[in-house]
Image 1 (cartoon, rainbow, N blue to C red):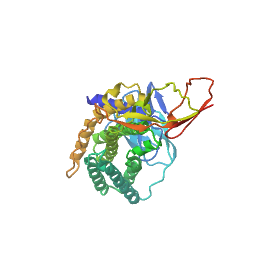
Image 2: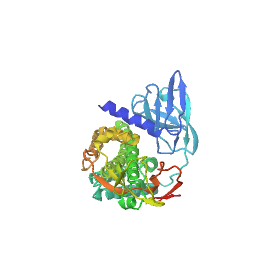
Image 3: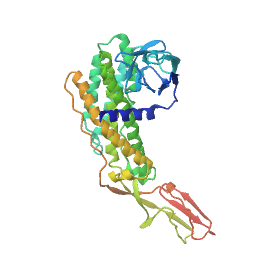
Image 4: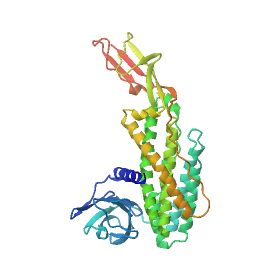
Length: 404
């Protein structure tokens, strides 16, 4: 079971990160592809090989001439943390892991950290804001996120800062870059409650809110997988420095876990799957022929919407299929996240909350609600008399039709 979960993690990782192309190094049929081709100091750089790289617990490669520890993730995947180098193209020497040919990677634009104390103070404020924003999800009657998630984040933050206090000046700078690059943006975690008055005013369709939350849940699920993998690997060589890095990576992982859980709980309450469409009391189906004798007419429609249910796993909607696949993968990964958190907790001091159990938020039975249907989503394509010239203008909540 563990092997299959790890395979999933890196399958997702490749799909989620391979955006900028690859840099291929080939020698005697051995090749390495850089999954990450642009990075700034502190960022995780991932690569995959078509062979088993020779990577031990303290193996290093040369990045821009700097010795950089490399971490194996599975049989042919590995990563390293981008060292502090000037912006521009730098060489990578993979000789120590079985390929004696250099590659290159681009160091992206960044603002150098000249004062680690100022940088770490700014990061501390950022981490505090993350907890404050997630607490809004805790306090929401609809979402009711378990408060243990934010308690654990506060616990990890405290230990990261305690460990930092005994680090050397250079370690503090290195860690500041790592934290700056990998701690999530608090603004992405702001609580935005669903406002059904938007639906009533025709400013937002119910299905659009559902699509937005589904996309958020899947996007953050990929980030959970990435930082979980990094945490496991860093923890496999628990030097004092790597323990801080592992705790920071887990902090990021659990931040995204919290958002995935919150998105799931919101999704379980959203009525966004349309069942029926009504023009006053008359049911309307797509491509229905609308007959009318008036010279002008205004059609106002209501949509009957329901929540997602388990049987939607068989939906023909690609987005809904992807959502349920993502949900299954997250549910399978969650016990490993709990196990890894418990390992780190055992290496730290003080008492901490246990991670809550994870429950699939999607129910077997739906709830339904009637909302006005947006006029911009209505159109006419059949008429009772082709000789009648018909024009129509969609408004927020209606379709104005004129015949001549």
